[in-house]
Length: 325
Image (cartoon, rainbow, N blue to C red; front, side):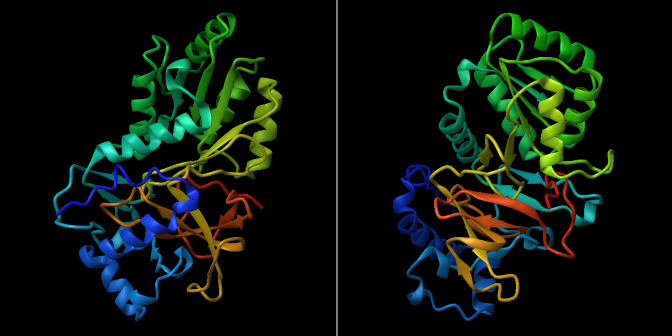
């Protein structure tokens, strides 16, 4: 059995708790892993009266268990960028179209019509993975632009520089989405002034460079490319939605995604704002688990935006995470 919320997930944030509760009841009934976790917590489903009272599944469960709502059939899976096969998460996707709808609508909210852009992906390490959700997203956005110069680059920095200069002369709005170490390498070798290009860093040093804070990374990129702001994307293989920051590392979610704070000492204490570990409701995860307790720490503000301040002690370091202190 598969339950699609395609027509329900894209609702105003003010109505989030209504489909969230409906989705919780569905996943509690049809997701074996999630139900087992809720039962372990002695959850009284009759007392779920707000998003904060919904149990959040530890994200580490995606490494050790199959997290699917309904039957075990799936279309494909996304895999996290762990250091070994044994510590990679797997997110089984029953309906790829839900993911495409989610990131396409999310992109439109933050950047407008994708057809107005030329999109370039500088994701060499991710391109070498077979099951990257980030590559799938960028590949589809590239296709949707229908721009002849949209595309992926590995380590072809000179060619990338030439293309960006051509786009700059044509005053073409360009979005360069890059893994952090590759953006830094490119900026170091080919500094330039790019007024028509926006940069989105996705995190990830992967041991290739000295670890830097997000602010340090952004300061380097701003100086090398003569831009005022560097954008960031917050996503992970266990989610089907993304948050974006256009400046100062402050992320904003699309209406069907919401971030909460859980107390680091009492993980069952969840609040709408404050500092602590990050819990996420992603209504696009209708066919897996929409309620995720991440291993990131940060701050959620009263307007729903959030910042990321690093990772919990003892949690795995991932390619899509960027330490910020």
